[in-house]
Length: 394
Ligand code: FAD
Ligand code: DHB
Image (cartoon, rainbow, N blue to C red; front, side, top):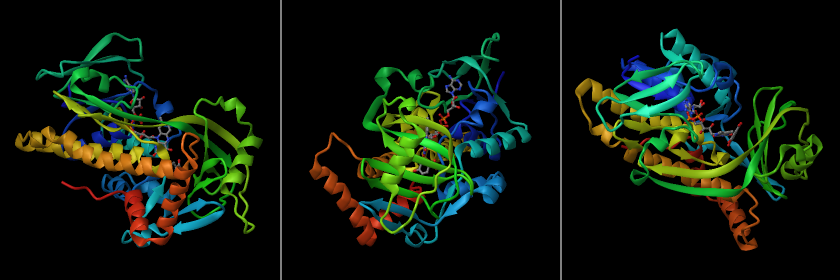
């Protein structure tokens, strides 16, 4: 097999890249280790920055999103029993975010890609990257996990294969530096059949720590609470989850969180991670393969799409004008945005979680940060601009 761009992974980074390359006439094939059904049903991120919404529409894949997403003009911050509405639209010259789950984005990307004649090989096994320090790189893989070994020959290999994929490991140890922070807490996420409790997302730090009230549809809500990342999910009965949600989201003004049947629950650890640089020879990393953020700022998916915007432009210039400059600067350009996303995610996470390794002094500093956002326009604007997505700089 041969294509111009061999992409490992059919997550947000890999699929957006295939679409962006198609738009400029560059061929690509995605190799994905999971089944289509698995990719289209795994519950992950929920918030799309305003420019990702615009991009979906520009790519002609925004129709279902425009009909089904919830568009939010603000978020609510809550601490010590009081709520503060952050007017994101007012603070950012009219920008909004969409709550539209990642697996719905992936369904739209996959359906459109296949209808354009694009190729996504699901269920591949033994993916191995070859010859990235030569002019003729390739990806070896097996169809249906155990089929004969095949080779996808290409001009460039893209590691859009998430945090645990082989992409990053293909950069020799001495040619990459990794920066990491592991947090002493995780998130327990639930889906519940309950009506909306509040008109926008609530990020709360109260009682035993963080809670997030999000939504999926008028009848299904998404909620998260801070927990010990090593907790067994079996230790979290539905009653314990509701008790904690009420404690962390409760107010004294008679508002009540509406409960429903919990039909999905799981725990994820929280970490910040960056690999520098994001390229080696003819291999380029994009998305979670190169960087992870804790989910508190809702940046993970959005940063992955930002990487492939930069990468598609660089590859476009390489094929149209034989210009190497964009590819040479790929890592440097992406990392400027990524570190700001890392900073915002770390800031939101430390401000909004209860950390037993921190002193009461530091906890009070976090409440002072929240109060600054409530009272100082510049502080509020900074959070709002980061939340909807920072402008791209050159
Ligand atoms: P991925 O989505 O991980 O896609 C990589 C793809 O590569 C996967 O489909 C994988 O199967 C495939 N792959 C891996 N190895 C191979 C291989 N050897 N061969 C072929 N294919 C391979 N972000 C938020 O903003 N909010 C959230 O609430 C949130 N929740 C999350 C929950 C979980 C459990 C996880 C893991 C992430 C969450 N994130 C969240 C982060 C967000 O989902 C990611 O940032 C986003 O998925 C990144 O997209 P990606 O394409 O870079 O990587
Ligand atoms: C959701 C996830 C997030 O990480 C976030 O900050 C906001 C919403 C969600 O899954 O709905």
